[in-house]
Image (cartoon, rainbow, N blue to C red; front, side, top):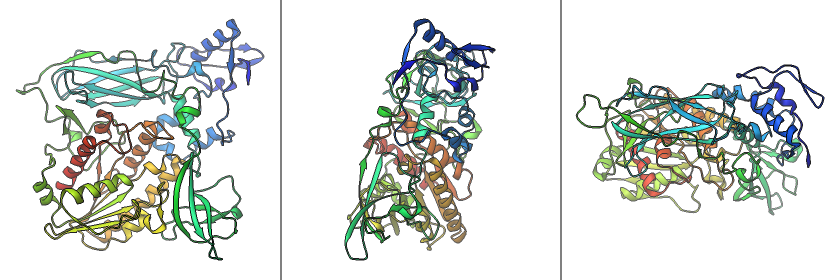
Length: 562
């Protein structure tokens, strides 16, 4: 529906840093304070009598109270800069959206650029009207690239959101010579808010999980399953919550009206196209999605230190502990030089040497839990080390077991349980908490590598947070039961291609939550590789072979140093 532009009532909640405007009356609406971006927007609208298409509600959402729901959620507490944005972010005003072409980055310490030191830069976020934003929440990345390399050499930079339109980028400088600053906006804050609204339900957005059941009359019926169905009455739902640890799962009652045992997950059906195509006009409009900002591409010169070569093997002390991690995935754990990964946490790298891998894995009981990315690790180890595989390939999610008498080692793969959007029988998807409970052998020599997250992207993040807490309790119980056992949390990797959610921020949000939940837990090591895959500009959930092998090397380094 088209109508004349009017002042958004929500603008009265926006704080101004540039100046305060009091007593404004436009078309009968009294405003105490509005953002400079909105004022300029109104001036354009009034002077030109502009007709603006009003934003249409997102299908399937009840907008009443959604801002409050997000603000009071559990997951948002991990992101204070996003929580500060929620009360003031504009919703539907395209003139207030952060603009890539008007936003900029500039150096703060241009005279202090020395190898092994820190480069600091200031990002200023501006709206389409060219005025600085009064709130944060934009999703940027900044990378220092080494010119003349293969295009992937460089180091990622940590970014601090000041919640007032300013962002501080902090970059380690591990080489001397030239470096190029690459700064891009991935999503404006307004688009981040739209993503929050879209993925805020126990019912997975965009996915219909068809489940086949056998009823009491021995007939086959089909129905839909998910974590929850908020719009359905209790009598319309069958409860299949995990009885041991409480992971919630429900299905709609089939036509027979009973709640039989589920026997087969069939396939996922995409109900909606990509979020970037339907969520709003601001989200993925080729102007502000993964676009460079002003100042991106500028070159700097980094001075040498007293070292003879042009690279640094040591940086600040807070990068030396292999078992620690920060909350921010952008904070670098290493850097790429001549195509080789150099860790800030250890000087050692174990590469692809088969003899070394056999030595590392000898006398180990290795468990791999998670999604298809964990299954791929299992397959690669079995093929590379010629391990005897006893699994049956009925479905990729079904458990696999292998053993090597030469290395005196065993290896196991188990999926992470619902939600898991792939076909397979019920017993092919055990809950990860139950898989941890099933480990009774060993102590020293028992290693569990797990990953979880990609199949939770399109749910309310509190669903994922609760699952992490349940898994954490199972991890702690196993470590207490088996002294000497170790757990490696394989973090999520950067990617931007997806059939229904082309957004790196969805993964960024979950990898931050994963880091937060397992940070500084005794006996648990977090494997960081978000920065590695960002430097390599990884596109898919399943990385190409070269990038996969890079992450495999990082994992093997963690395993070999246990």
